[in-house]
Length: 411
Ligand SMILES: [Mg+2]
Image (cartoon, rainbow, N blue to C red):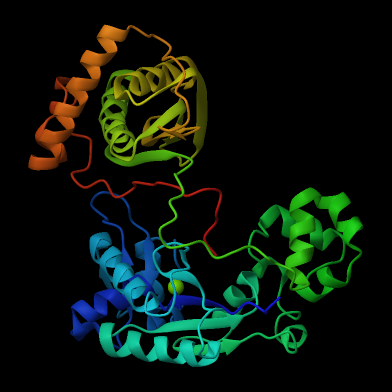
């Protein structure tokens, strides 16, 4: 079989770079994208190369970042714009292949095996095109599998191409810490360290069955990855993977002090989830509620349903009952997140809804779709249930929306 040619392209300092394209006066400055302090999303989401050098890291509170870097310029996030740039990057990739698999907004794998041109040349052309046409830079790894291509894109940045071949991977990949491998999380890294394994090379040289006994199936895959034996395909650009969960969370402007207040927030978050489920033709088989108290301690509760649903009032009702029966109320609540879990698509046969009443269901469905079309035309907050109309503690801008694709972690 012909050896595959896989590229992994990673946009450098993506959010901060997009901001610099939009506002060239920010170029070459220490720039960070940060959540809104007034709404208490006060952390660094992304930083420029210069801010990074000054010690600013992602997730750092804004005040600390300012202390580390006196001339730091903090701008609020513009996710619609990042998503637009992300699409433009894909347009460039599509000149070479239809096998394009995104990993977050700023990373993509490309399978260019069927191209006549050499992988390195393609990478260099993409790098130049991104710079000329979008004003951004990317780092690209070129290799014979996805895992090594991703590691390659990290080796030299910004604005560089690194080739990992069957001849050089032992020299370039094996000295790296094992935690750099895709899907090697904190716990796995710890277990491997206990076995004396700290580098990718050390993992590769261990007996496979030993690793499998210690870490199970995931361990066996990691061992394969370390040895260059990853055969997972790059997914076609039109392939649709339904999300495993649809969630929405919010940090409240003021702490919530009782079930009544928290319930209003839950209802309002559920509205958005119901809307999203219907838009994407998805059904939930359960709901989870994460409560963060004023001391930043999180509690997580969940419930499975007996059937599947798209109904926001049901999701809200179940989440509220989880809250009422579990949350001890020793402290006020700072943030709430609701997630519709065990998602299935509409082509999976739908079981009967748990409170099924055909006529009532049909009516409810018609009502929901009418409400959705009003929202599509006039905006999400054009129509709200009376319970949330007087809500003052909800931030005007809810930035915490999270739709998690599969079980991927962001590297
Ligand atoms: Mg990146």
